[in-house]
Length: 278
Image 1 (cartoon, rainbow, N blue to C red):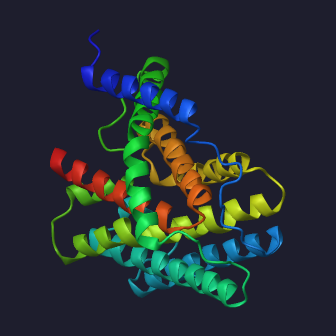
Image 2: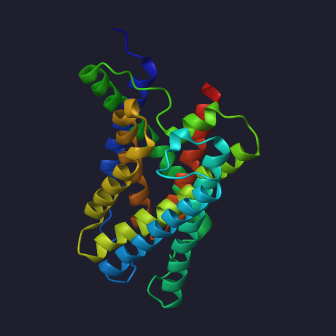
Image 3: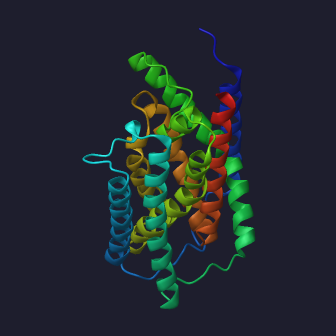
């Protein structure tokens, strides 16, 4: 059995960068800014629930407006229906999340980061590029374990939204779906997981890395439904490492701008790669 050269090169690069990170203490978070949000863990989790509810209600309203009854099966939706339902859910959740953060800042419960937003965004872009070999290697190794254990070869595209977009026509609805995946989803998810969930864990007394890892576990589990069954090993492993990158960025910079920028870049890169392979 031949082993592809690119995954081995990527793995070697990931190991080399990990050694450099360890020696340079790049991953150390003690004494770093953190978001320093002041609401109690219960209040932060209540905000998290409010965002989820807003997204859920918007999903149901959009589905009913489209004449979709009963349980919403993403696989059965047309690209137009998926675009409208997704953008409605993400848009509603994002607006509630941003509104809550704005309210906290007005009440001086969420101080702004000392790092300039443009610098935070640039740091996020550089960081996701540095983390990419580890993200790709985690997915490749998990995929190999899955293939050996089950005989199931991981598909080239490991996300149902990407599959739908690759198969869809590049019309207006395709671009609306792309807007949701590239812009709305990163903003919503970083507010939700790095903002409310991770900060609730920090306020509950967990250390920075413990909060990053636990919030990343929640983030990964919440994506199980959007990953095709045959791709779960590889995709979820990659998502777990990717989420750790986002959590580290939030703690390191004291801002959500860096993880949002990194998340946007990753989703854009995934979409470009998937459409290029089609």
